[in-house]
Length: 97
Image (cartoon, rainbow, N blue to C red; front, side, top):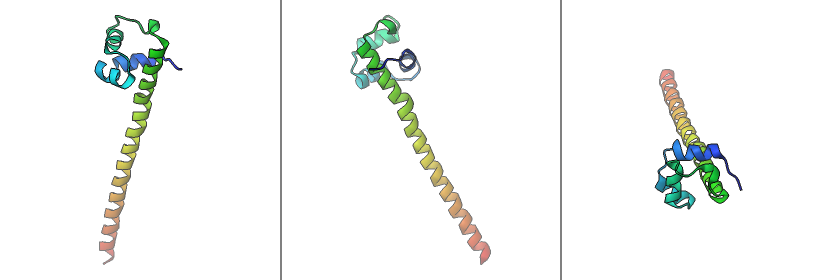
């Protein structure tokens, strides 16, 4: 099991995810997420099980989605490079004629 306070704080306050989305993805009751987000309950006093679930979800969001979005960016960039090369080859072919 794993618990990281900074990741949980990021998830609750900076990730842009709603209480409902965090609840659906983590399985933790909405009321618990709401209380943590509004600082009615403290992260330090939450159950280790919930801290583990929130940490794992935060890792998934912060790192896995970043890798996936970088992959999409790189694929798009590769397509643009291929398009540019194809255009250059076409122009060179015209110059040779």
